[in-house]
Amino acid sequence: MRLLVVSIFSLFHLANGQEIFNSFGLDGDAQYSGETIYQFETDKDALLVLNAHNIKGDIEIYGEPGNAVQIVERIEITSRKIRWAEKEYELSRSEVLYDEVNGMIKIVGSGRWSSKVEYEYDIHIPKHTSVQLINQGGDISCQNIAGEIDIQTAGGDIELQQIAGKINAITSGGDVELSHAHGNIKLLTSGGDIETNNTEGVMYLETSGGDLDIQFNRGNVEVYTSGGEIRLNGIEGQTIIGKTQGGDIEIDEITANVDMQTDGGDFEISHIVGNVRVATSAGDIDIEHIIGNVNMETMVGSIQGDHLGGQIKAVTNVGDIIIHKSTHDQEIQDIELINNFGDVYLILPEHFSAKFDIRIDGTDESEVLETEYPLNIKRDGMILRATGIHGTGQHNVSISSHFGDVTISKD
Image 1: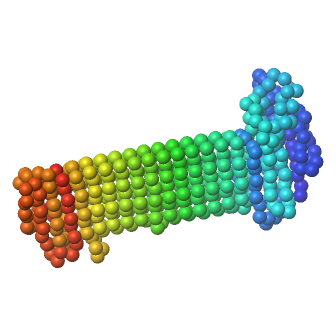
Image 2 (image 1 turned 90 degrees about the horizontal axis):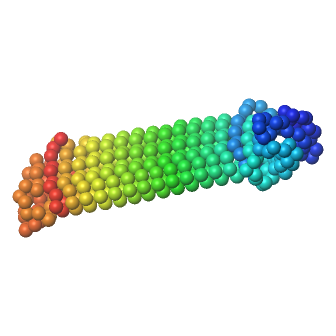
Image 3 (image 1 turned 60 degrees about the vertical axis):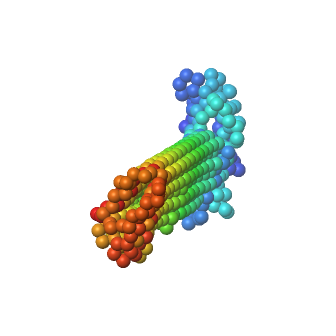
């Protein structure tokens, strides 16, 4: 193994994997800066791991062809005394080691943090290297790696690009961005947004106070946010599961079964191939072009569905329900609409075979039901019942409305 350590101010020798600095350069008023470059060759075709812990500062990692390693450590120290700056660096500097037997590239920080010392790391490693990194505070950028990624930062952003391997990334207070990745994915942040684009693998995303934006993933998705919006687009998989406690959810161009919930926001959903189940405590649901069964529920809000294919269930306590049923070859296409305070509008395909069971209560008005289908209508005080069969009566259509009008028409 060949190992080279170079300082921009002086050249140092390596002893037992340690390098020693004894000078800095003055860079501006009361500002000292230094740069150390570690260079060495790893064993060809070795299974490598970059292990960095107990460090602090912004870190950029690049995967490169070949088996060379270059680690650049940049330090800035604020002080009016060079001796204090030299001493502070001596106490705070990191250690770089290469364990040839285990293929381990190690960066070990001292764990000594000072508000007057700032670090930056620029790391170039062989592309086929796994990364294990714990950062005490700073941004992390990692790209062009064909290995597993396991990184944590206590207070910064994470940006990952062109990753082929399992990903586990956690930040306590920053955003996470991931693009062009292949492998199972787990991204967590306590107070930031998460954005992904062009990925493949099983995905789990969670943020305590930010938005989630997923674009073009092939694989199952599970997403949670305590106080932000969720946007999903261009996903192919078996299941998509998620929840937000206080934001809107937008879903488009999905091939998967969808099960989503928000405690206080609206839904906008379109172009889904798969079953859809959505629920909101206080918000509207707008859904269109679905090939599959649909189950929608809102406590306070309206529901509007356009070109819905399979079975349909829509429930709202306060708000209108507007459903446009499309023609579909699914064997069972039952419809159940429940509305406590609001109107119901249902548009059916012209040759839709249905068995109708309609109940409207809470009003004695004579024009609460308007229908283009011949139904048997009976009234008992404040309750109106309407039943009938159109065609073979293959599909059940059940409507229950309280204090609202019902309109049924043909497309």
